Length: 158
Image (cartoon, rainbow, N blue to C red; front, side):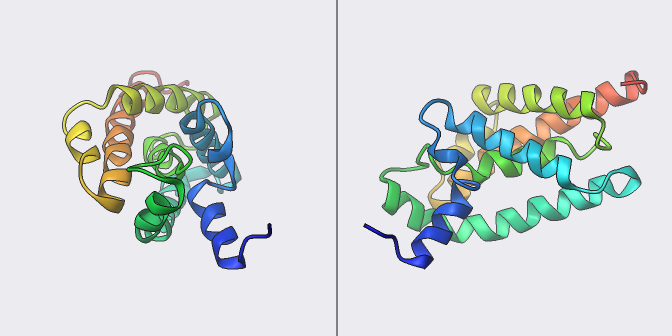
């Protein structure tokens, strides 16, 4: 049965191009979507601006779709909704300058903080709707961004 065009596009957005439909580890697949987006962005001194603007755009697109996705996929923060991981990764790599070593390190740092959920990420996850879906990943992205920035400052050759 064909999906209505609106449903198809909503699913494409919240699953980051259907990466969230990967049967195992959809959050990791969604983070890989963030890597692909980061690789497509212009590098150089403006990389942080582009990464930040892209994260803001994804947040603006995904937040209002959160209640729809929870109803569509069933339950709070459904696993196939991975746009939050994509967005959190883009926050992580703000200091990366599009250096592949830092983009890879950022991937692992973001996944670590996203799974660990240090304060206040776990509390944020309990919030309803878009806030609960996105804020824990934005907190994880902020923690990972700080650590990545420290790595870049201590080892500028990375």
